[in-house]
Amino acid sequence: MIERSLHEMAQALAGKEISSVELTGLYLERIARHNPLLNAFLTVDAERSLAQARQADERLARGEQTALTGIPIAHKDIFCARDWRTTCGSKMLGNFVSPYDASVIERFQAAGAVLLGKTNMDEFAMGSSNETSFYGPVRNPWDSTCVPGGSSGGSAAAVAARLSPAATGTDTGGSIRQPAALCGLSGMKPTYGVISRYGMIAFASSLDQAGPLARSAADCALLLNTMAGFDERDSTSLDRPPEDYTRELASDGGTQPLRGIRIGLPEEFFAGGCDQEVMQLVEQAIAEYRKLGAETVVLSLPNMRLSVAAYYVIAPAEASSNLARFDGVRYGYRAPEYDDLNEMYSRTRAQGFGAEVKRRILIGTYVLSHGYYDAYYRQAQRIRRLIAQDFAAAFRQCDVIVGPTSPSTAFKLGEKAADPVQMYLSDIYTIAVNLAGLPGLSIPCGFARGLPAGLQLIGNYFSEAKLLNVAHRYQQVTHWHQARPDAFA
Image 1 (cartoon, rainbow, N blue to C red):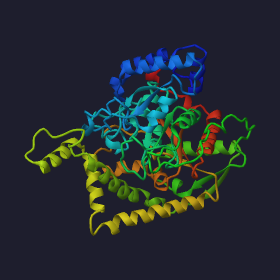
Image 2 (image 1 turned 90 degrees about the horizontal axis):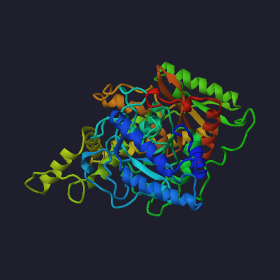
Image 3 (image 1 turned 120 degrees about the horizontal axis):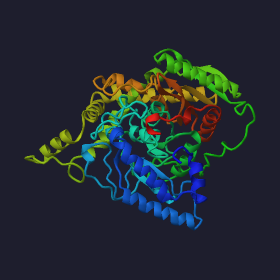
Image 4 (image 1 turned 60 degrees about the horizontal axis):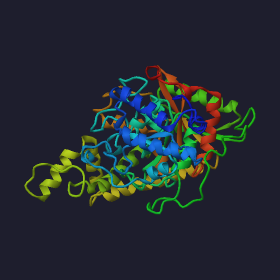
């Protein structure tokens, strides 16, 4: 059962082959057995999950099934869920129990999905390895001495180890796509504004976007159907007609289903800096796309080389503002000893935040300060606009842009922890997508030295259905997305 797709699980539930209670219990048992090693889940409430599963079974008995009714889904611990502890991977929120549901959680509940648990993450989503969590690092199911990627590493590890059929994540600079690549999954960051950010604890508000993590592009499409939609409570939510993101997956397409699709290959993606074995796998995937009928076009994204520098000005600036609310007054951690209000603020934040979060708050406050705003923050925003213009020019030449997701496979735990710059460069291929607000998708494309590698597909605004179809056609003729770690069979 754990190897079935979401669609196949839904069919099994509808056909009474298995009940939601039995399916949820299967995954809860696997979490109890394997999570002590992986540290993928921070909060599990078996009683509450099984209660939701019983409600789902009642819906199924009444014939009120949706595509996800009765299917357990894990959620990144950045989404507020009513009466669930929501920590954001931080000591600062270690005792916070949310009084309301995030929009994403509401949508899954309306669909009848079961909340399986809350997954570990880099603290306040700041990290590329899931090592900054106050609750300890997540381990990669393919090699427990390696990182799973971040910041949605807990969600990725849970799905890769078959502790959950699918999971939610958030992507600020690659935090869905990079762990998807390092754990051998499919993970999508939609166009900015397609999924509501209401109830999603903010890191960098103009960059954060929720998205799905699953084993295949087809599963991601089903999840996106539930997650996407307008929400008036989020001022950045886009009021657009509902879409069926699975609509292009069912057609046969013949022997060359991608005939007429132009795949852009940016020179900057192939100019060095990527592990040689990973790049060979990417090139093999591109060759497979040519067999499927796609045409390849060489193009350039000249300002992409500035994306990391621009991102690490803009994102910390927004983080310094968003995290100002954590002061020990209204909710969350408060320092136990202090003499006055100012000391309470300073001690609470010094004790409640980890080193990486403090680093980004300091950087962000600096670049927004008088005398430095124009030199850093304004310049970074100008670069952001140039990057978006580069993509706009590129999509006049192609339909989809393809390249590596990450410059390497999963690295060892602790390998880059002492060098923040090297850690930041892990997202060198993904950050530009967030700066431009575009959709991006990572899918598995092979193994290098026994670890998964990811292929990134980037689309124009609102081209999620096309991206998912291009990924799905590749997965129909390859088997990389079906691989699983032997230790978690």
